[in-house]
Amino acid sequence: MLPIATREGSGLLGMVSRSMSSKPERRTRVTLRCLREDLEVEVPPVEINLGGLDHPLIGEARRLAPAAPRGQRRILSIERPLVYRLRHGRWPGATWLEAKAGRFWLCAGAQLEEGSGEDAYEIFAALHRTGRLLPDDDDRHRDELERNARIIDDAADSIPSILTDAFNLPDHDATTRFGGLVDARLHVTAPGEEVWVAIATQATDGRFVEERLRDVLFGLVLDAAEAELWEPRADWPSGELAWFEVARLGLREPPS
Image (cartoon, rainbow, N blue to C red; front, side):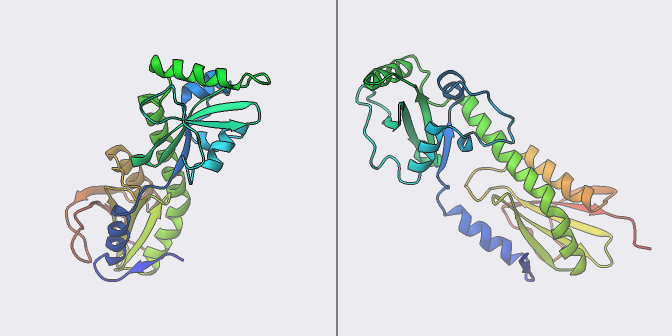
């Protein structure tokens, strides 16, 4: 059921205030180098979550992620940062917890013959010495692209419903959360010529909602509302615009 806020967007303010103090959700990630070279898996489109791929070593990383690194042994030949062992059958692996971002990384893996498991950890240490073990900028960029794709796909699916609610209850705020991450509110003024959209600049995982992503979300809403013109606004029809929001006003043809 879509929540409706009737007093100056208090529903959205409450949602964002709570999200800013919460820790990011722990997520399993696999580095692009590990995926291509160690697991020999082709990199899928950005709509696919790499941490959710069907591979035994990635699956084991997902299983351990919520409590990691509890129960894992360190790879002692890597002094800093703390890198831990992972094993599934004949698949040894190396993991690293990026705690502040809530990302549990599968950094390396190998499929070895019986009794040769210790050799794998020396290989992983060698990768670390050459700067090829830990995630790099490409890995973080891939994570960002996946995140944005999830938000956009969810927004495209949910916008018709929230618009219907906003048109059915004009002069009230309708709040939503795109992809479980980006808070937004809509306001339609009677008799339906103005469609206001406000989007939070910080997501519930604490990360900044970049301008390009906000532009896409604004476009999805205003296109679905059949707005012919739009303009940025620093105010809000039912009260003040919150400090963490940016807003646009879309103008529609008067209803016949």
